[in-house]
Image (cartoon, rainbow, N blue to C red; front, top):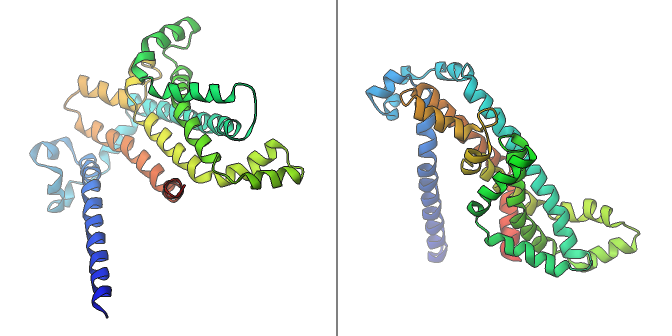
Length: 281
């Protein structure tokens, strides 16, 4: 083996070791929360979660059984699902349609309308909270799950449209012209050609949108009432009311954390493809 090859191999090994260390550091809070959620309140009061490595008898699923009996947290979990999933689907579908229109359809005012969409990116979400809350109150949407979904969709669309429009615009024009010459309609070109090509960008957008809505608490605090509040608000409320019920809060917090982690790793391949494609373009 030459000296250059040895150096390259050593360099790759150091990089891999560094990445493993970073990964372990990143996973430590998740592992700590998981172990804490499997311990009783008495064991938690006596020592940290790392004591389970020497006393594994502390671990049990009793906390999760208690969690399933907590009506507030279970209802809040399903509220979170009912908010996050429709919001993500609506943002991705509408943004994909709008992104294709802005990229490849010629209609009056297209450039001016797209500049307006770009301008909306700089509007902070805090500015619209009170005016939209007043409007939703007049429309009967305040304190409802559809109201929370509608707010997230409206504020998630500018970035989503901007992202997908720029990605779709990089598709070779010759490819679309060939499809039109073969008799393909715009809808058929969009569904059979543009969407498959744009799948990495769409998957990346779906991940970001889902994570943002799932972990949101600011919007939910204002727009959701006690019957429609998501898991983040319910956990915060129970911490304020019952600060010592760690045996319920720990598994609830882990449940709130593990779902986004599972979603991210499930779409990781598409996410990496989208990042790499964007860097090449």
